[in-house]
Amino acid sequence: MRRTVALLGIAILVAGITAISLSALSRRRADDTEHPAERRDTYAADLPDPELVAINSSVPRGRSTTVVLHPSPGVTALSVVLEDAEGEEASAAAGFQVFPVRDVAVWIAKIGVPNTAPAGEYTARASATFGGETEEFTTEIEVEHVEFFSMEIALSSDMTALRRDPHPERTREAREMIALLTSYRLDGRYYQGRLQLPVDYRRRSAGFGDRRVYRYYDGQRATAVHSGVDMAAPTGEPVYAAGGGKISFSDDRIISGNSVVIEHLPGVYGVYYHLDNIAVEEDQVVRAGEQIGTVGATGLVTGPHLHWELRIGGVPVDPDQFVEAPLVDKAAIFSTIMAILRAPGDDHGVTERKRG
Image 1: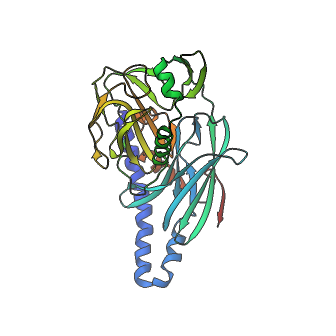
Image 2: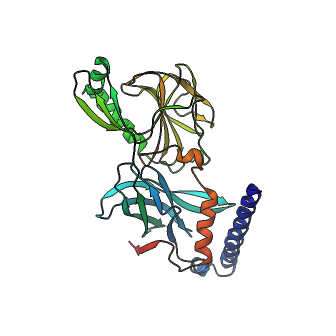
Image 3: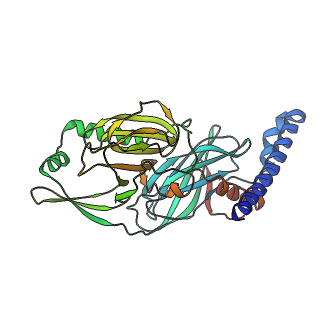
C-alpha cells in the first residue's frame, strides 16, 4: 500500500512538472517561429527566476547534501563552495545535469560535509555560468554535530615502519590519489541509484569517521580519522562494485595495497583498498554488482578486510547514506523543483543572488 501511494505521488509530481515545462517549451517554440528576435526574453518570462535550494538544509557532518538550481535554461557550468560562518571553505563541488522528467534538465551539485566540520550554520555559495555571464546564488545549510567512535590500534614493527616511512614514492602516490579524487568530469555520469554493500561478509571492523590512535611498536602514538568503513572478510572473498561506473584507478600502492577507484558521477568516487587481487583495468566500465577483485591484506593492515569509502568533491562521506538512498534522489528533486515552480518569488532558502 505504501509503495502504491509513493508511486502515485511521484506520478503526480512527474505530470505536474512535465505540464509546466512542456507549456513553457511550447511557448518557446512558438516564439522561435513567430518572433525569433524576442524568443529568449519571452521564454525567460515564462519561468520564475532561478533559485538555489538544498534538498536537505540540515545535514549531519560526514554526510552529503544536494543543492538544486532551477529553473536553469542556458546554464553551462555550476560550481558550489560550502563556507562556515567566518567565510572559510569547508568543501567544494562542481555541478552537473540530471533529467528527472523526460527532457527536463536540472542542474544539481552534491556537497560533501567533512566529518571534522564543527556544527553550525554554513552557506552554500554557487556560481552559475549562463552563456558568457556568471550569476551567484546562496542558500543556508545547517551542519549537525555527530559523535564518532574512538579506537586504538597497535602496530607491529613492520607496520610502524611502513606508516612512518617518509619515502618520496609514498608522497607521490598520496598526491596523485588526492588529485584523482578531487577531479571532475562533466560527462562522468554513470550511476545514479543506491549503492550495495561490496562484500557478502558484513562484519564491520571499523566504522566511518572513527577517531584512531595508532600505538607504534616503540610506544609512541599518532592520531588519524578513518575515511571509510572496514569490512572484515576472509582473504579471497569476492569484492563487488557498489555502483556502476568507470575504473579510474587500478594498481598497487604502498599504504592502501591493491586499490581500485570507480567514478560513479562527476566528482563522486568509490574507493576500494587492500585487495588481494584486482579483476578490472583502468578505463573499464563496470556494472553495479560486478566483481572487481577479492578481499586481501595488502598495504598497511592488521588483518584481511576491505576498506571501502565514498568521496564527493574529494571529501570522504559515510557510504551507508547511499545504501539507504540513491546517489541522485529524483523524487526529492521533483519535490524541490515543483515547490519552486508553484510558488515563484517565495523564499525557499535563497539568501542572495547577484550577477557577476
